[in-house]
Length: 358
Image (cartoon, rainbow, N blue to C red; front, side, top):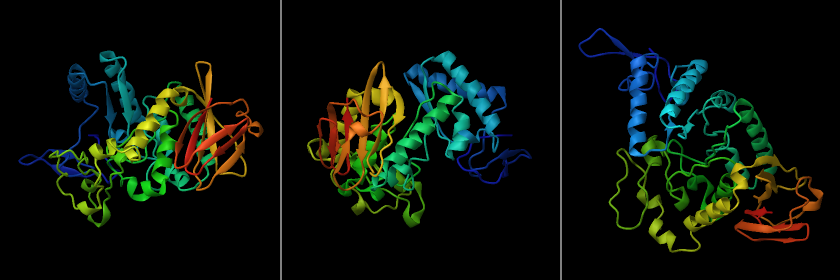
């Protein structure tokens, strides 16, 4: 019997009460797994998808997608190929994304059939965090270009799916901190980039939450801080000290032009106003002797240039000396801790700041 679980633990079996039958339980003995080789099981989960399609759901996130067949990526990929074919028969434009929590070498196998979250860039030790904390943005743009080339070779319609943190990781505001500008810089790096970014609820408020010594994911999934008198409760098992949580919720931050929520709204408006960023052909720029880095992206005959300065100090960039950036004359948008200005081919960009040029 094969099944789905959320971590690669040794295979274990549990005897069903009052029976000599055994079920496979790799994740937890209280979570028996499904046999996806059984036609009736496949039809049952397809019926579940149809139920939600009929309710108006547009798509699904597939949890632990690499574990459909334990330690067998070929079989798991083939399952998703078949299942997604059936789903698209029901809804041709269904949106799907898979969690394959592993290295790029493993994740890339699944891009043949489904887009996957990028875990190399995410989390406390990921590249977004490293670059946001005054790292070199050229390292990021070079990686993204190579990554896109690899997944598109697997599937021409493959799309990058970036994020900083999610329900299985400590919240980003705890290690990036809005006060330092690192949180805002990390947001710039992934939202002003290609593909379909995912924002974990509350990230846009700077919500905090971590496992700590309690070792429970409940501390990463705390109640949304609406701040409007709501009655939302923290999940069962929470041990996180409420005094460490943010006090200004969504209601207060919506009325504050300097809040993190307002920053995220501006960032998303810049992304929407420059669709080339998400949809275009990505080409990394190669800047030398500076931490400033970025890319150009071309879509439907229009090209934008995005440059990030993750350092804490102002940088002056001569665009005429950068191959691929010579022709940009208009500063379309600036967002960050400081400002930017474009005079002729000279871009002056402040620390922890990003600029979009056309």
